[in-house]
Image (cartoon, rainbow, N blue to C red; front, side):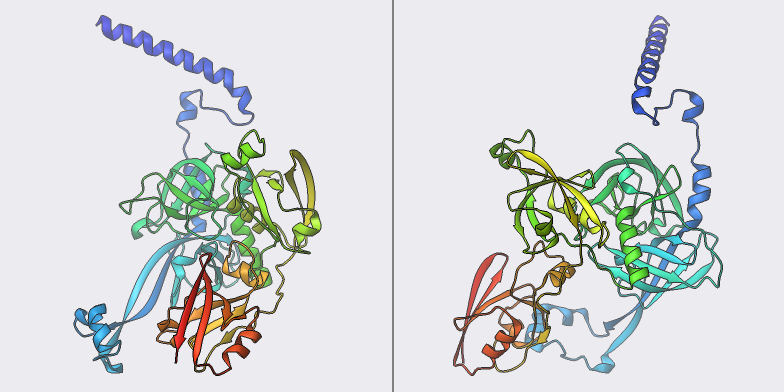
Length: 478
């Protein structure tokens, strides 16, 4: 009994100390404060859910796929190598089946604009949007963006205004903020989970090209993709996209695409009909501890600029090779992915303020962002003829094409965009994203020159391509 009394007094003292700490630290938290009463702890999310949940929808897709009727062993690469891809499979030897999948989406405009993940609707022949009140609508794809894994759908509301969520400025989010994740995990129906923002600006996730994610410990599971991440003010702060998991279930690490990127994609696809991102015209690398030490920086931060496109926005704005970009629009930059995100969520034709470090001194610059130029014209060409590159589709690289392909930086020359199956180019090992540098000793700097060189009869072909930063050579004798 004495032990229990001692423990009880110790607990009371600890509570009193904690309460004192709350009272001491609360003023420093500005408008945010820790709960300091039982009543605050018992606050319910129910009013928020009632407001936000009707704008979160279930998305069902149907896709017709072909399957072979014969034994699975004929799909084995060993058999296909000897008997061919079409052995025993005439047009009448295959059948069709319907493949169903599910995900989530968010209504962001009352006239029927729905945002989801691109991978949720990719390849779908039919898309059905189901509201929380069980009403169903057929949806059409307005557009999609593989660089962010976002897609925009539209449903015909018949003039009715649907419940929608307003987008919050995701740059105002802080680690520790409470959030709700709303979606349709495992197809069980609309589900709400709660958690906090556990990290911001996650750029090493590798989910999409423009990596810059909100991390949360709110439970996100398969089927939640495309669902809403909602803040306590009832606004959409992110689109739930992926989880870190070794089992397929939630381990408390989920990732959401920030609302500022969602806003940019929705605006581009619904207003302009096509998605064109602002272009900086400068490329660089993360500042490591070694680089920071060599430049007498107090800590590693920013992006070290290695290349600037001549007469591009960065060049005109005063950015030089060797500068370190520290911030964009007041937001700190820590790596190239973060820089790409800040530029991608800006507005074409508008001026942005950046802070750079040059020779140990910080300097502010103003840069007017523009569309990436189509210079030179891409001249996409499907090669044919008696040469090893027949069956390859090539193009002149331009800043516009580089941006579409999500290349880290601009590089001039001719790139292979696609290689047709069972073509000479495929058999000789050419791959998409190969740069063609020379053919029979002739430097290749544009598509027209490459076509001319390939049009000349030759008994021997010597072709050099650049792949992954390394030069590879192919020699073919007729």
